[in-house]
Length: 135
Length: 367
Image (cartoon, rainbow over all chains, first blue to last red; front, side, top):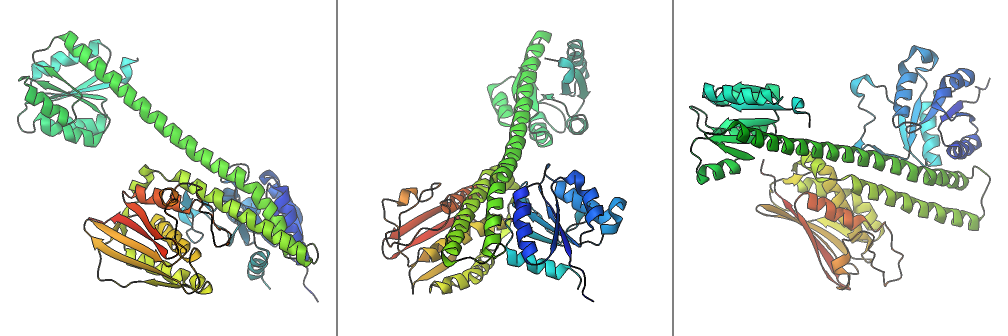
């Protein structure tokens, strides 16, 4: 029996980014869902039950992506998604001047599984997704 | 001005003097306190954080001239006034040298005290206000820079993302002409994004941050890593890249990340503006108290008319060999800015057709 197609959720406030990345993911035969406001994330996750999340770091406020990632990984509201891999995506490598390091989980902050620069290179994106999704 | 908001500390061994001053100051509405010798005055300054300190020059034990610099250590913006029984020019000059803002010759009248204190308070208010404005401006700048970076990069990133999707064939196979046009568009966008990034990182660099980041940097290690890293790029252009080995050298005083940016810019330039079969040679030597790094290339060289301007933002030398210039036009401007922040210097010597040598002088680390 074949496994069901993995579903990837894109969380980003830029609809063009969502559309462009959806094109890449769909042509690689992934299912895609998206949400463009951090406020609607809870609902969308519960409805779509994605296998992996692409998350923009800088949405409405500077650190939305960070806190949202931490919430998804730790908050009881997102209990079903604590183990769902998250890939950070952002055009901003350096936030407020300080380079941040994925491997440093300072002050109890739960970070993402991977990080990609915007615009994401399709090959890199698909490779990362393959690595992160359990076979 | 709200006098109540300001604190005046009196450090004097004469009890009568302390009491008289306290009385006048309290009557005028200042918060005031007193200490009877230098050490306890400094303790008080640390805990109570006064705005103005009246310090007697002549005290047993620690004298006023000793107290003054220590007060400045506690709060560099404190306004010290010295009280002196022997109002000689010499004593006053010496006190001013130690950071005193003003002095009161003994004996002085309550009005003299009031006048001097109110001038000092005005000065303090001015200094504090100034500091506050500077801080606000810096915050605004930082925030502004972050916002601008987000606003400018986001649309470019979205456009690039579509182009990446098209190039990956996500919307169907592309013809050769389509592919080439899209590729070129993507490359131009990448340059534009790189330019914004570099411009912003330059806007962010300032002297205060720099001083906080100064450490000891081993230049042979740093440059050796870069030479290894860029060797492949150089080989692709058939350029030999090497670091001349040298004996033990003292470390440079600087920030490792920023200096890496300096030398990677210079090395990449030396590779890009080279010719097939050419070479790029890095060398480091010590000339106390400085360290001198030379990046020598055998490239196309720079015409002397351009030399005075090549470190300016967006200044581009038109290439005469028909090769399209790469890069953002900011690389050398960033080099110069970083080197200046290190209190070093960068210069260039060049012979067209033979090559250029960029020389960076950096202070050696004393620690």
